[in-house]
Length: 274
Image (cartoon, rainbow, N blue to C red):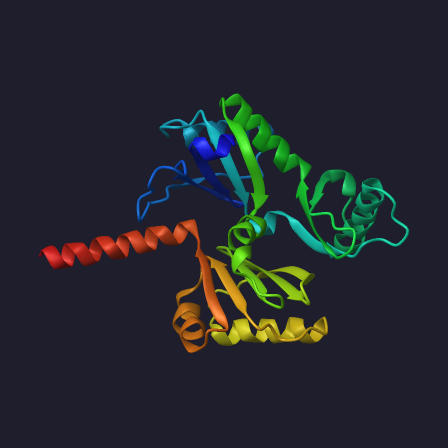
């Protein structure tokens, strides 16, 4: 309920940068375009220096002491899918199985990661693991700055929650960031695969189609009846895939793309005025 009546800052964090935008309360009309400021932020800094850099980012921001909705770049977290463990009787059993799978898949200690999931007892669950050190830095820095964290989600989850109402049963979903995309595949209504794939410097529709075909063959999946694209969609994808067939649909553009749209709109207006 608090989120409905209050405005908040959407804080988009990747390894070297932080982008901040104003999230306006739902009963107010938001602007058509909003320029999203970006600032340097190095997540590899120790907690003290990270906190100082965090404070410097928000120093001149109007609503720096308020509510934050934090989105983490997918390359900062780890995703995997967990089928319901046999003989599991409690949430503790599910969590233990997720810890074992995390360690097996990524060769890390589960003690260093916070595991969260949409725990499902009758179908596969989406598991997300976030480094505890990163969470501690963000929590400490925001608390020292007088801020409250309303939510903290990976980009894929944040995008998915806003797009899932448009989903068909056997659709696939791609959330695109600056340097990677995260693919979620579904079959017969169940999640089958979540995988983060680094983007090459130049990726076109051929590259994307190849990745989709490869994952389908590797995991014995049927090609998607629908592919929803969300995030920072490369221009080459938009001109090729989205205009060729209704199978590929743009579900939601990334915040950073608002800058591009805003600049394009301003240029068009300036041109018309002159």
